[in-house]
Image (cartoon, rainbow, N blue to C red; front, top):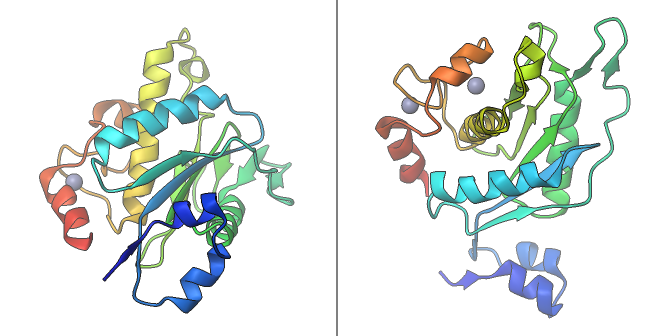
Length: 211
Ligand SMILES: [Zn+2]
Ligand SMILES: [Zn+2]
């Protein structure tokens, strides 16, 4: 099975990128993770995530790319009664983006407060299953200020990293875990603060078995 560096094709404009996918079945596609933002999010946060994802995911992703161009907030996502934004609509946009641009996984980042109908809020959400690509995290409830505490950049960034790893973990087929592990479900910010920014051995070996 020959490895095709899709990015090299893109860079050199040798052939139409999407045609490779359809015409060369059996070629290995290098896993690529894209990070982008919806609306106003400091690019530094995405760059911080990229650097730390490289460590956490080891060599799992050949490319981790920060996409600078922000995406627009999905239409109809705002719920004026709740003053929150409906998370599945963001996931849908991310999915479309990932497919159009041939990303294996994409993590979207927003500073808006996200919810799903069954819950008061969500820190993030992700697709699950063998075809999963899209994940989203909200920064809104990760700021120490939200809980009346003084701003602490390191704490805020660490929380962001944890939520990002967790949601990407779901797209890699991981369910919630009861070990000392990033895949523990976060019901509140104290759950997020308690868990490590790493997979337990069991979860990591599940990821490895698939790649
Ligand atoms: Zn989860
Ligand atoms: Zn685990």
